[in-house]
Image (tube, rainbow, N blue to C red):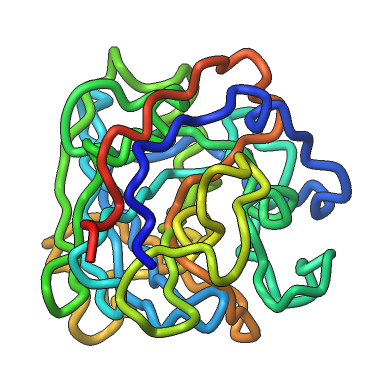
Length: 270
């Protein structure tokens, strides 16, 4: 049965902490203008994959391009840049071992210790802060084949402080999975730990990719065409097999109360 309610985010869900995170190993060097590439690998056996390029412009603006496939067709897919600017932790994409409750799905809360807080909400327009983490009316919608093509430039004055310096410590997570293969977000897998009125399928991570130092020649085949510049290729751990739809709750995001209205109906009535 299709989930047709307008869904509201619960601010308390964003007061989660990142206990048990990986040891501090982040590169503390100043981010340099140029292109940083990311390879998106599936989470939760979602079948999603893709590539992304984060371009740090000379003026401090940030352009983000994402090309992904294997997502749930005709559904909104929340996506975010995760990490932090204090570079105190080397963030990674979660492995199946992060599934603390043993239900077979690494949910958003279980992934936070690995991939960290929401740094930027990759909305199509308007606000891009953590307050828009659940603004699916402004998140990209996969086409009928499950593809997402996204591009947006964020001006330097709307970016969190320290973004340029910490660019190498940032990464992308997409959310939204369909484990029962019925082409929609429903409650067959249970409710989201963020809000019991939300289906887990809509908020579970589907794909993740981290930035690593590399060259443009290492961009995966079929990835985003980025041109010249210092590239950073990413790849999540080869073991990663978790879920997609990036409605990530951030560690220490208690101050981001009122995360926003889930104003888009996730599916139509049968």
